[in-house]
Length: 479
Image (tube, rainbow, N blue to C red):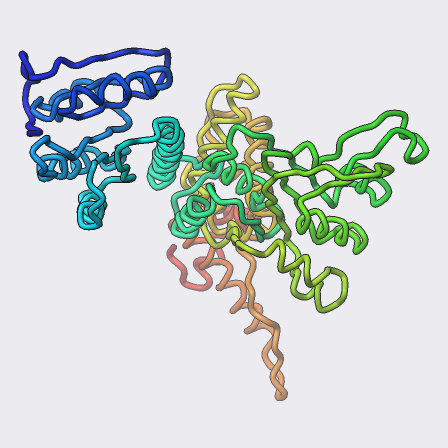
């Protein structure tokens, strides 16, 4: 039986261990000594394999030497599978991430059902095709490794750390991380939508980094940055002599992404003729270089991004409807910075550290007052605008602490701009009273922002301190 505690000595079957370099660790639990040579012959060349008898204290052994997978022989030799099922169930409870395979000589559907209910990942009936077992086990271990990596990334993100370069622990970002995790291992085309500067390429990189193509090519193409005369050759490649200047054959970005991921940023800027050619590649999975007589079979995952309303572009005839449906299989929306202001402090901290280290400067900090201004700013340029501002502050502010005095006026004003419409009633209004009302509104907003500190409020409003005090007395504002 499985039992926690110190591993026992003098077990019915001695453990047999072999340690290939960096090989995954697995255990085989069986009472059938005749099965061991075949298992060792098929598994030892690939895995660090330890064979245990069901009577050994397996949980205690695993606590001392963790493994990644277990192959459990359900048959106890007396025709019963109860002991084997108990072992499967306890292994699953001991480590929910463990890959557990079950082996039996019975073809009973009930045993299969009970084994799956106990928590086994796979079920094999003897005699086993050991080459198939090896392949399935390797695949399961790779899937386990990706799941663990993804969970660790999500846990870091949830605690305010980064997720593959994306920073934030707000609810919109948690939903984004969850969406990335769900699509990472698939092959479906992903369309990332978001405003300029939100980090759409980082989302594409996160999908790749947490998916099954993480070690394969990642080719990024900004469609808006390439002139129309060059983009076809850049995407599809060309043969020597196919056009003026084509002095040698060259693979395009699509071909270079074979086996990996192709990221097309701002796909909405592609012309209609290129849209047709891209659609043909997606349908046939064949890419043909310019000037080539035949195409090449390819396998790649496509991730696209746009800040354009593609539905409107389809209606206007600027974007092919059939291509739209091809690329919009899995849509992911990236929130603008103004909708996740809880992340601004994390982003500022990250950029302060990054640009201080990158420029060999002492680490700077930002005080709460200045941070409050940044959190109220609408950030039309999103994370890119914030990053550029922090980089500039790191380089230009000579002090260790960045305060409200160091922030540019456009940020101070934009974060304090009234959104009220100027409406004049039919019977008119008192101009002086309206001016006074607007003055009071600005003064109150500045005082709220600065916690009632008149000097800081005066800086926000680009006003002399004495004038601030005078206006506060005039309107009865005590901060």
